[in-house]
View: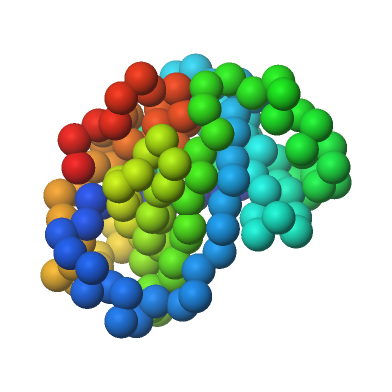
Length: 155
């Protein structure tokens, strides 16, 4: 089974920007979402589209991703549930790992979240000072929940 192991954090400050790349633009929406399963379509930089199916909850989840023709993704947006999630993702090096910082726009601004994908469940990391409160176990901070929420969670 394909899986991802990730931790998620609110941001304490903007000091991460000094080490970040130029970022990529994401426009994503959900075709299905329920506890333990969501199906997302993501358009990246208006050049490519990916369909992702995520299963499970918590720090380790199943993740299956497939390329989709860009025009198909644009047409499927009409079948979405919830809002379109718009964000810019920046990558910040953290030793052998990477912090992915999502700066949300449109209805989800000014939310900023960071994710760190880990090679295994017990992988120890020294957290950089720009990371704030960990929200890994808080379902309000999943992208699917943000797409379906009436209001932003605390940030």
